[in-house]
Length: 137
Image (tube, rainbow, N blue to C red; front, side):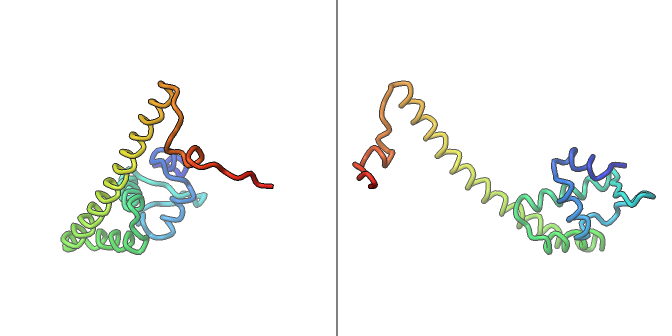
């Protein structure tokens, strides 16, 4: 069994976030010890993994709760859960595509600056180097 601090460290999620998720009903089987400390089993860590995944893609808490509730209902909800995972995957792919475009731009700019430094050139794209600026009096 793991304490909330141990789970936070292990899963790279803040203790505050884990407590919020627990209060939201995302971890239906966590226990509490005699001191009312939440204890997570190995199985509970699987719940943390899927919740973290869904949140990182931007899934709303209400939709996560729906997913958890469907899991608790059982195998009759597999088609609906499959749909949720498919929609989440599409959203994640769109985010990855957006990030790749950002990485491409950053790599371009990185190479641009390397060339400026290597060849001791001025940055002709910098607006400050294109326009004469009036001094502010």
